[in-house]
Length: 121
Length: 462
Image (tube, rainbow over all chains, first blue to last red; front, side):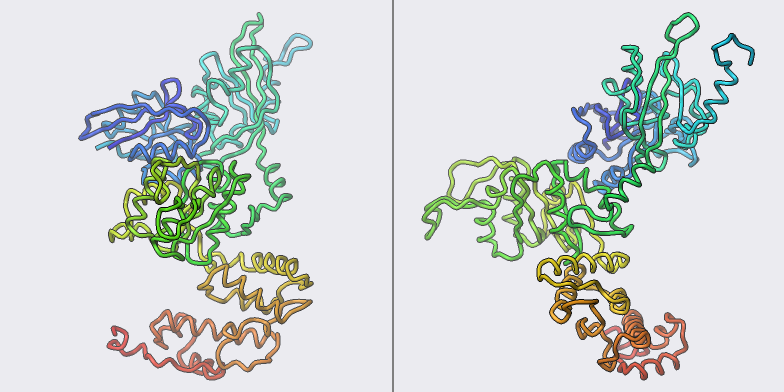
């Protein structure tokens, strides 16, 4: 299962639509079997959606994301875990282990829902 | 704490001022972590101060300008020059884009050393709302709507238009798929290039192939000269493929190749031709279901389904009926040089109750038909088609409220009977009246009892 993590300065990028770099991991049974990098040169959010769909990404763990793009990602068959913040490697590791905790990794003002994002299988 | 040298503002006073202003203000240290966050910043962003303090400013404000080359505060801290009134947007916790204007300044300590930066931001939502009201937000291109069902499409259209992505429009017949396609083209950078529409269901497969890709002289008997296809005619522009669900498997393969490799061969050609065409496909069928039934290629489905816009049926956006009717009245006035002032309230209430199986196209036809009879003034009940008036109602009832009430009653009863398998008991229950009242009203309105009786299980199963 491929999961994409848009990042900036080694943290989850604050805004999905303007993130330039996406780390894409392929995780099988809790083991990362491949890592790839997707780069985008401009600020077109739709190109990111299309890129992720074409890259056959199954989930995206990202920072702030506007509703229209959220809808498009879901329409493209991608599971979206938005409003996540934190160090990229810590988020990836928490995702791999299924321990991406809302309390620890939520962006400020986004902790209303308790619980855990289900991680990679 | 409040005592200070003349000309300096004490920290308590500064804090009080910051708390009282309507602009959001926050400060950051040299590690870009938020050190203060005023009351207005809390209100505008919806983020409590205790959650903002100590977090990276980019994760608090999450603005489209956050980035290496675009962050105004970063620029200010690099060159020492303040920035005033730069516009952008941030994304709030609900995923809404909130327009703001930003200003930045350097923070220095008493000795003049840089200790961080300050950013103020102003919520422009209200200004933006007023601007939209002034420019009539209920219309984008030829699209007119006040319906929440269309809001998402209106939100998406500008962003979808500027992207080169293939778009799939799904919706019942008459919901305006071609109008949306034209609007996307008009809003796109390709607007000065051709918009070419092809109805894939209107041509047999062999003709459609030569129509799309063209042919070379000698390709077949009668092909005496080269003929460019629709892809060539739409070069640099937009090709609208309506009824895409109707094309044959063989043509699906060719279409997939064009979309994937951006090149194709006209019939009889020995060389491929490059194609720079944005494709917008449309269908009134459930393409996912066709894929499951192996009637439509899965790879082509995913190729055209990059952006899916689902157009609601008119019965799902009834609040738009008056707006659309007014739009069509204005258009036919212009085309036919008439002065019809609008649709009367009684006629409008009947239009409102109709189920509109033909959607917007049906409404357009109804208004066009009414224009044959109406030359000035308002379109009245009598000028609507006969099937809009319930069976058995005496014609010439005029526009009286009683007459209109009767029409609406009859339509409600007929629809309730249909929904409940012609069961009088269930229909009466749904309408909130007793069964005997239902029979009495049907008799008064001249409605015939349906032949199928909802009580008979055997009949329903058949």
